[in-house]
Image 1 (tube, rainbow, N blue to C red):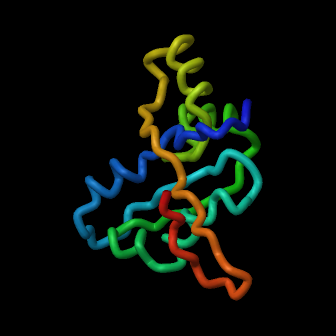
Image 2: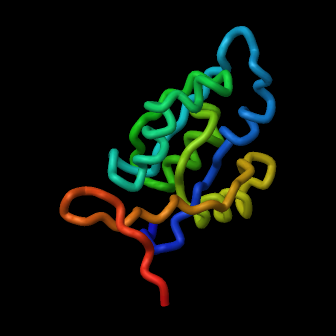
Length: 128
């Protein structure tokens, strides 16, 4: 799979789970698979977990490293995972071959990193 700047959240069923999980007594268990090994690109998923955002919405999210964007889509379509971060091209390919098995997709990009000074403090955006 290509690693272009238009990385997509291939399947983000967390959105559906959040909408369906209205403060249930038992947390909704979500298995989430990444597109590749743990990288900075995935930090926002772990930040949300560390800050308790998933738990506050009644979700018990387990995040596993992946083995490539195409494998992520296959694992979700096969039912091994509820959601994942993969590549839009893999979803399109699966939808063309097996429309009944194609997962739904939310096309969203990770937030851009904030520029930081050497002290580690964020710097204000450059106005043009």
